Length: 261
Image (tube, rainbow, N blue to C red; front, side, top):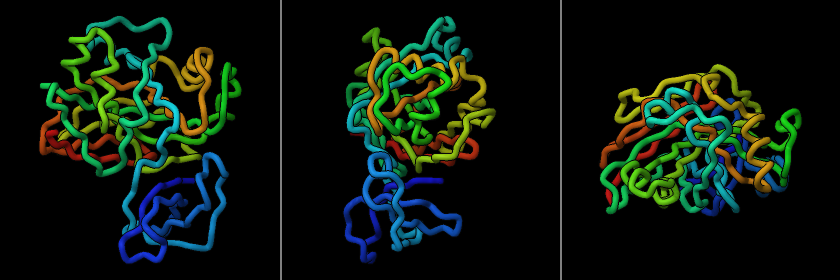
């Protein structure tokens, strides 16, 4: 099931407040009552064509975005680091989250801003110390993320908060897929149509159960929290005025434009 968050078109009789819906196979969206992460998936009788809505980030985390660094061996190598013995975690603020076709804003203080395609886990319930065999119980679904990074600032600071924490630096979408099962699916990132990153989810060093188990051994996760699972090699600069598309086979594609501040 694919869950979308959207605003209806100006001619729709549904108001202009953000709504949630289920994307049906016929290209229509069936409206859901409330937020499905908190209220469950309660379909209404109202439907609208997908082509007549503006998709938003499928979830706005009320708490945090937890990120896993260097989770692909080839990316660890291109960053000049070793394969970690345990997951490396850092945080992005929830104010960094934007949705499909929104604009990534290049901060004035940075001279290089990079793309990083990642599989994103959406947490569905409060959880702490989750055993690996119970991880599926706390996952609501999966979406695609771009861990946008001001690479020069990351290197200058020696830690990652500023370089990865700017507003608009966490595009996610286009929907949450509640049935997606990570496996060997292809992961790609393209800048203005040119492929820059290409790998498979199975190339991850730490798998989903290991990641969730590790993160929840440190902190409590809340409904709507997001975990970004790391990026493969090929990260590189974006271009002001260009477009970046990140995609995961079977999960969709997320495209954003880039603009100067």
